[in-house]
Image 1 (cartoon, rainbow, N blue to C red):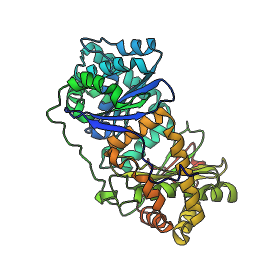
Image 2: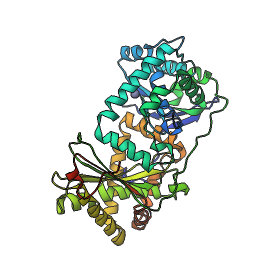
Image 3: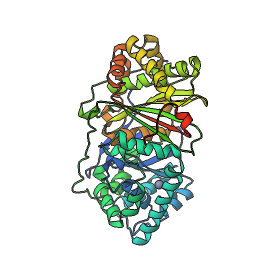
Image 4: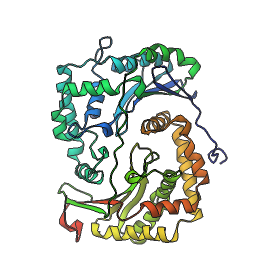
Length: 445
Ligand SMILES: [Zn+2]
């Protein structure tokens, strides 16, 4: 596979910045006459204050309330008439809006999106019903799901000092507490060209669209001062955290451990992330639990028959400290207290003996294959660039992971396993439907 093993590969793109600060990234893909138009703001739930959680998501809802020129519903109607689709999403590091439309409709999308970046109007008649919609959304999602309810509390404990411990949708009381003025202040502070990136993927290139970008987004004024992002530090811990709960609504018990881990941009407990560590953790997750032939699955599912599933995952692309996750689905008659010793055995063995060259090569091949596949999907391609930029990356560093992956050694993977899969760095969450499923463990959350 010469193409996917090419570590010098650079994602084909054109990138530049408008005088008002808007970053523009174009990923040309001429295979279909469609373009995905998206705007990514460097603001999300991580930027919220305690007591005002959920404001980023609430503002995302309010962005559909219209402007003096384009009343509420205009974007919807235009996208539908053009046969496109649209959506918006809020996460910790970003708030993003996208429309996928036939290429001839692109200019219209730019005009509408640029308009609502500066000219959103908001009345109490818009705000109050939308608050009800969001409160209801919280009831139907987080509050309706015993596992989501539990993890909301666990995350608050794991990220005790940073805003990654806040729920993105907001605490129920906060949703009831904030005002139209809070949302407007949020909008005015963070929705500005110098705090956003325009990402286009599809049948376009700079020569074709630069003029339209200038005449729409280019005419927007720059926000005088977008406050720099506060990157809070979660202090070091001396002992692991363990949370157990019983919820009679639980059908299938949950076992999940979060290890404190650096992201591509931020180390653990205020330390700097070392070059290559994020990619090494990515490979480690693949070796430990990325497939049915990975170590956790082999040990817990096949050999010991304790679990129906066991996996590991790692998210490198976050602005602040991240987590390395291990998740186990115990067999129906296996109590949750049997899982940690079995997982620990797998991790101890990996740390003592190290990973093999065969495992490393298999993980590298698998990661490159997934990424090549992801690049072929315009939505995924857009999403990966947007996440990277809003977490703190630039297009100049977007493909660095390929070179890091190519030169990654067994020793690099062993080093991050030893450094990050530690007892004091972990938070374990166990949720059962009844006391029997917890075994000898006692509920404490
Ligand atoms: Zn929502």
